[in-house]
Length: 159
Ligand SMILES: NC(=O)c1ccc[n+]([C@@H]2O[C@H](COP(=O)([O-])OP(=O)(O)OC[C@H]3O[C@@H](n4cnc5c(N)ncnc54)[C@H](OP(=O)(O)O)[C@@H]3O)[C@@H](O)[C@H]2O)c1
Image 1 (tube, rainbow, N blue to C red):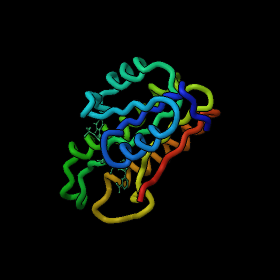
Image 2 (cartoon, rainbow, N blue to C red):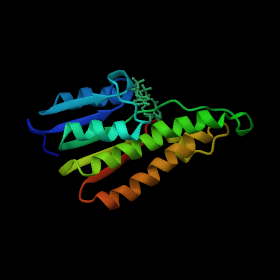
Image 3 (tube, helix red, strand yellow):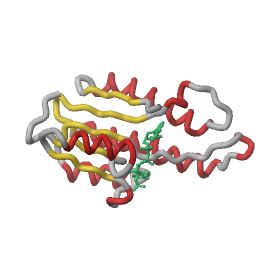
Image 4 (cartoon, protein in one colour):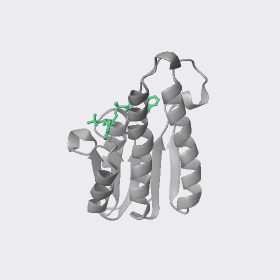
């Protein structure tokens, strides 16, 4: 990947944790880095807001999605389904909304990077929501890698 003064990288979830670290590393390269989260006024659970915000940025090169680390845990019998859906609205549907909005904006040679998590590959009792979200995101990235080619789509599984 060549970074120039014209390169625009967008890190959604880039105000904390892994996203902040990614944004800081990108900022050391040529080009501009824009971060977003609820702290900057963007809630990724609002697909319309995501589409409007991304369109406002215009053509971009690299999009990284790390938003949404919260999800209810515990055994299924005690799981609050509305909290489970809310977690999917952020981490899963938020990633899908960002990918959809970015599809027509990422320039040739650009990339889209999603974030899953190690639980996708571990059958651990009490982790249904995170496990299912991460597995869904890994499946999503495999499909989008084909749909978006030659734009590269990757999913990073931390820990
Ligand atoms: N850290 C780990 O060890 C680990 C392990 C496995 C997987 N992961 C995955 O890696 C990703 C990043 O984790 P992290 O530990 O870096 O999380 P984090 O420190 O909690 O950061 C999450 C980021 O997402 C933003 N965010 C949360 N809800 C949002 C919303 N509705 N709209 C827009 N932005 C929102 C937060 O900012 P606001 O609160 O301002 O919105 C923050 O910038 C997550 O998908 C997590 O599941 C992390």
